[in-house]
Every structure is written in structure tokens, then in C-alpha cells.
Image (cartoon, rainbow, N blue to C red):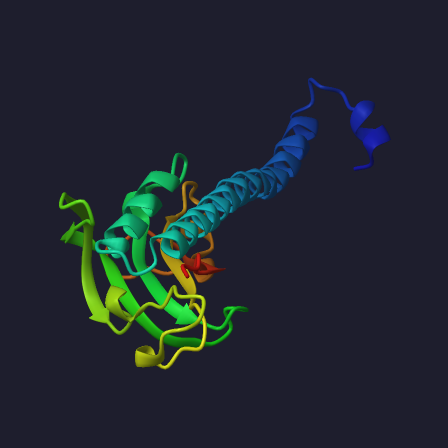
Length: 210
């Protein structure tokens, strides 16, 4: 029926009512999917921005901390502080601290930390700092980081390092969209909520010392 025919319809007619119900039932699923998509996209984008902000803050801390004792724990602590609602720090999957090219497109060495367990570092002032991570690889230990402007000959560096921090994150769908369209998500392990796993990395040049 055209819009004009529907307008002129006799509302007491069962035929008219059934036609409208059919049209409504066809439009409603599309409308709900559209609304859920908008909501899901908005929250997911917010989580992406939050993780990106956390990687920037952590890379800045890494650049300032340099090779001081406990630098890794300070980096991880900053990530925990920077990821705020609606993102959730418990959804961080892993953190990678790397020596990279200044553009960040080449990784020379890296240390990886997985969310879970506990990692304790002794800081320069003698105090201890614990963060909810476990170190899985140690390819770029604190002692191998060069923050000397003239370079570190013993490490084979001619100037300060460019240090990058990559934060991996698993976003869980908050609407039934993941169940309706299972191809857009995946489960890391059986039983996990479907969602989207991504990472964001930021790179800074280490603050030099003379």
C-alpha cells in the first residue's frame, strides 16, 4: 500500500491492521540493528581512544624513566591509571615495551607483559611497586635502554633510543549485535564473550641525559 492508501485505510478493518503489523515487523529488526550498531560503534570507538591515550601516556613515562630501576612497573602502572570508564583496565591483554625506529614501523627488541598475576619492581628510591602483570619475554630489559644523547657504545647505539609502548585490549560487545552477526567478532577462548581484540602503540624519543 502507498502512504496515501494507508492514511485512507479504515482502521476498524482487520485487513488494514494486519498490513501495518506486517510492515512494522519487517522494519523493526532493521531499525533495532541500526540502533545497536550506532551504540556499539560509539562505545567501541571510545574504548579505542582510551587505549590509544593510555599507550601515549605510558610511552611518555617510558621516555622519561629511561633505564632507571623499576621503569617497566612505572609504565604498566600508568596504563592502569590511564584506562578509565567505559574502558576497563582488566580487559588489557598484553603490553609490549619496544625499542623501535622513530616512526615506530620497525621493532628491534621488545619485552612483553601479560595481564594477570603480579609483577614487583624495586624503584630508584628503594621502594617497591607491584602491578597486575606477568612478564613473558625480556628482549628489551631496562638495562639495555639508552638515554644518553651521545649514545651508548656498549649497547651499539649512537644516540638515545626511541621507545614504544603497545597496549593490547579485548573489547566485549555490549549489545546482542555480536550474537546476531557472529562473523564480526571472535572468542579468544571457548566461553568468552565475542568481541574485538586490538592494540595501539605510541613511540617517543627517550628524554636524553648528557
